[in-house]
Amino acid sequence: MKAKLFMLMLLLGFMACSNVDLGQKIEELGKKMYDPATNRIDEKVAGEFIQTCEAYAKANPTDDKSPDYLLKAGETARTMKNFTKGIALYDRIITEYSDHPKAAQALFLKGFTLDNDMDQQEQAKTVYESFLVKYPSNEFADDTKFLLENLGKSDDEIIKSFEKKPEGE
Image (tube, rainbow, N blue to C red; front, side, top):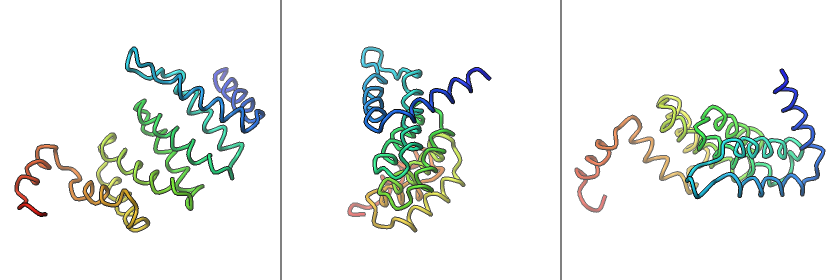
């Protein structure tokens, strides 16, 4: 209960800050999050980064930076192996910012996370197919087709399929 109250107070405090303050805090946390000496992410700082990105988007829903920050938060959550949180953030972009260029990337990353990180091929297939319908010309379309064609295959099976193809294909 105390933790939830603290998080609520922290969120309200972030919302009271100006856009510049929150944006600045996001940049600072982003720089502090990764420790090159240990080659690891500081999970506490990363968690604060994610919360600050979410607070920015909540306080500034129409700001063009909001989907960018949410995408960075989703990627951070995925890096921390918090796949459910990452997908929730991708879904938020897909739903709330469907016309923003980052919506396509969020949809792709959702499928990729389901496929590679969560081993949920059927859900990934649905997301990949949806991506190709919505964004057939997107820069990730070829990657999506490749992933869809190789869904459920092991790395060895994919390599063998390349070896079997005649040159020029």
